[in-house]
Length: 570
Image (tube, rainbow, N blue to C red):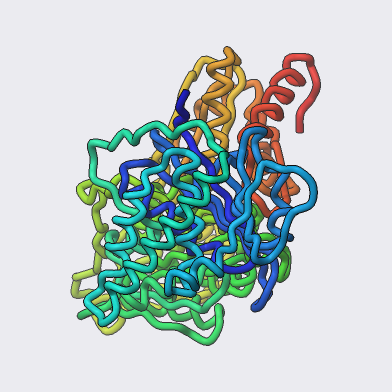
């Protein structure tokens, strides 16, 4: 009997990420759907690392709960992850480093020694991948095709590298066949009838933002947002495009505000500590109504916290990043595919309502590699800057009745972008009526953004589950399992958290209870929903790791039963 899914985990301290990326890329080329997950320490040297690849014949929603194959590069990797193995799973361990005690579903390979024997000391990853293939009937030839494509670069010695890596694959496969272990055979791939790309969440955000017209990027390196900066430095190039690394997050927010004031579509990306440093600048952009985008790739906090782990604990900070009456537009994509469209939407939202926009992602989504449908560029439009072209200086840009075009410095209607309360032209004023009118204008224009993408299923159910951000995938998988079991529960999801689409708000008003799974201690999204008058409760987790589907299924069942039993959920 075959299986539609295979989950492989690589655990150790070195070589782990490369192994997972190679397996994922090969599986995608062969026609499977893949999703990766990586977690590693924040130390510069050493520390436990593990990566995971979920291979499936259908689109993957999560990185997978249970492990079919564990590849232990070290004894710590073996001890820390052996309990995640399914009962009939197999462990491949590095016998050149250690031998596990007692009986286990395992066999050893001297990864490094075999690599040296085939003539390439760096081919230990291929020894491992070769050993995985026969266990689950994964096509070895697909791995060899990957090796040929990967290492044929037009350089001297390419042929020798390809030959050595192919031989390493064979040696690993031979050892696995001799071990006598076998898993349920992985069903042949069902190739999608659409074009795909392999991409990470951070790269998808960057690509989407550029498609939305972004032409200015300033960023400071901070985990796990640095790869957005790296992508921009490599790709946001050419005439009238500019990307550079600044010396601090404070300089980053100042630079993108200056660029937005000067007519550019601007963005930066950071993590929670950077958002804290940008607080005053975000308040300035809100008050002066200057378009710009801040991407927050969340990690465990507060302070340095868990800089290389995942969490959804910055929602309060992103929704209300500045002192005073401020509530930012917030977009939180739930999948790698959505990251692309969120990048474009954030840039367009900033232009549409003329102000700062927060785009929230998470470490697990930022680092994840996944094959997704090639983005449909016809669905992405780049909102143009509406520029004032009149002949009047003293243009009243900040009059509250409706949004008007923006002047540009040195052009007609040049204006003052003032962080103090101001009159219609931007000059400072402390008159009470001006503060009233300015506040109502800044909040009132948010209604221009209440048409975000959203999903509603089983709308008549009294109870609904409503994930946000990168937890969407595992929650979706749990929801589908609950549907199969006959649990009467609805599905609500919005990529835009503020303002919410009107259809989502209408549904929230009808629900007896809305269950919100989220990766934080305080239940931040359900608290905000309750503050807005909706009946919401959270399922929380704050381990630094993503949700497991099985955990969610049980927790949602308990929440449903508790509500039906009359227990008050908060």
